[in-house]
Length: 112
Length: 113
Image 1 (cartoon, chains in turn purple, cyan):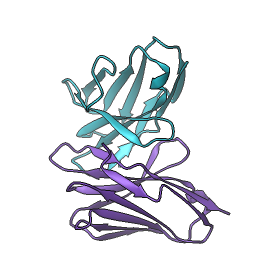
Image 2 (tube, rainbow over the protein chains, first blue to last red; image 1 turned 180 degrees about the vertical axis):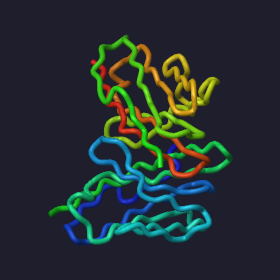
Image 3 (cartoon, rainbow over the protein chains, first blue to last red; image 1 turned 120 degrees about the vertical axis):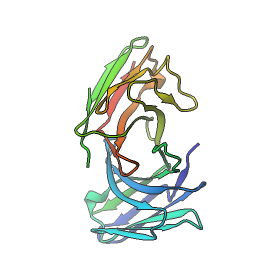
Image 4 (cartoon, rainbow over the protein chains, first blue to last red; image 1 turned 90 degrees about the horizontal axis):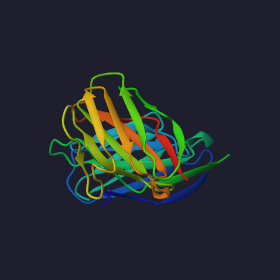
């Protein structure tokens, strides 16, 4: 079963606006990673946040993690048409297996 | 970071045949994995490719259907056997080093007719 669930499943915004995507998961995690996928192509790694971290930034991306609520959010500021893609969260439950479980994803459309 | 390549990038196959997908990583990694992404869906883990031993399969996936090899630290193959149209998916290889960032290959788009 899927560990993470993204919310919303689809999001459409105007260029320049901010986009926020949320991810909830069910069990304790070692870390959580966000990925972008353009139209059925490979996954691009965006950010990894560890369970003892609360917030991370990378360029226009900001990720937060609330382990008490078992949730994470990805904020893309000043969105561009090129940000149009599907975004997935993936959780590593630890235990030494190093495998990640993916959520269902959010389809983001940025309208020029 | 690790750069992962996959071959072939896409293929169209007839039902009943088999296809072997290759995954090459440009640096030594500890773990390699194979995922399937069905049309419009998220990624589902097929198995962990173990170096020099049998792969560890997730529930719903079996070795007879998806035999996997990993002869060394940087190379793995996934075979999709006795294919049916339901096997039409993107197959992705991933790798991680010591439990940190998991990197993905560009994927192999498979269409089974």
